[in-house]
Image (cartoon, rainbow, N blue to C red):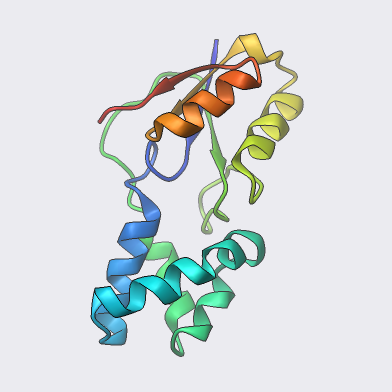
Length: 142
């Protein structure tokens, strides 16, 4: 059995809220005011990468890699990462802005049938959607 781990929420602490806090701290804007602009940019962030964060303030894209905080725990082997956010330098993941497509890419590249993989995600909704692909999926609870 091969494990497919969601990059944000399983392998790393949830990236989006961490990135939002970093942007608020460095940019000097209250989290409340920055959050709407950030979540409006999120689809572009997934599709185009961290450079779109420059729309918030100069230098914002440099905070992107700092938002990926690896969880200090052992994961089942063998595992591969899947992501709907572009992984920062040093992390390899099967990436696509649509998470289900990222899972499909991983299965194809690894030569696996859906039933040969277990997908772990911290969001029950994504686990349910992965099950619709025929992948055994479980909700990750740290």
